[in-house]
Amino acid sequence: MISTNKSRPEYVPLAPDPSGTRHWFVTNGASNEDCVRVSLALAGLLPMDVWEVNDPARHGAGVTFHDATERKFANEAALFDALDEALRDPATATVGLRIYALGSEPFIWSVGRIAQRYALAPEAIRLQHSGTWQRRVYCIHCHAFNERVTQNIVACSGCGRQLFVRDHFSRRLAAFMGVKADAEVPGELPAIEQPYL
Picture 1 (cartoon, rainbow, N blue to C red):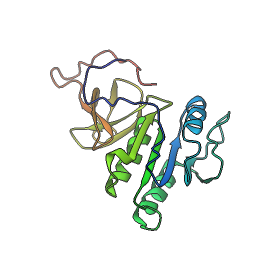
Picture 2 (picture 1 turned 135 degrees about the vertical axis):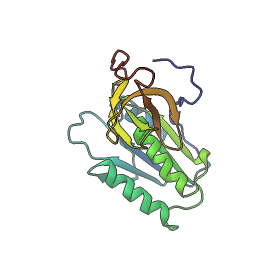
Picture 3 (picture 1 turned 45 degrees about the horizontal axis):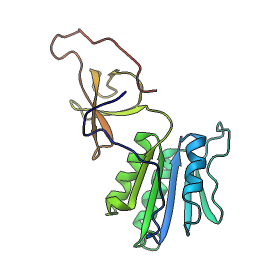
């Protein structure tokens, strides 16, 4: 799906920032091909910490770095908690830290939001989408977040309204906007499609 909406993020392949003095690669749900490509692109950056959700269903090479500290997590929530704690600690979150995030849009933008909370400069955080196009959708009516949305119409988990998933992306919220789909004519919904797989 091609959009002319300027809020829609554009991604470039992750590339090393040799000016960094410490590097963290954070990933979940990325394709094996992207994991291999990033492993090769970021090879040689030291010190390197790899933060990854342990997915037993994953087949293939995954992420491999030589001389890297590997941190495996049971789920995204555990990874986000550990990342938050590490960025709060001045002994680990030193000047020159660079974060490279690879995965779904909700995942990489959540990593970016945590990093920004601790005042990492935007140029110190690099994001690349890989894997599913499922969306996190923010209801503008009740302010609930709806996760793993694949359709253009979704029932809000907070207020129950049928939301039309707009292509407007909020970097601050790390989510796409959802607006009441039948606001003009109650009960009249657009055709339901599944474009975000």
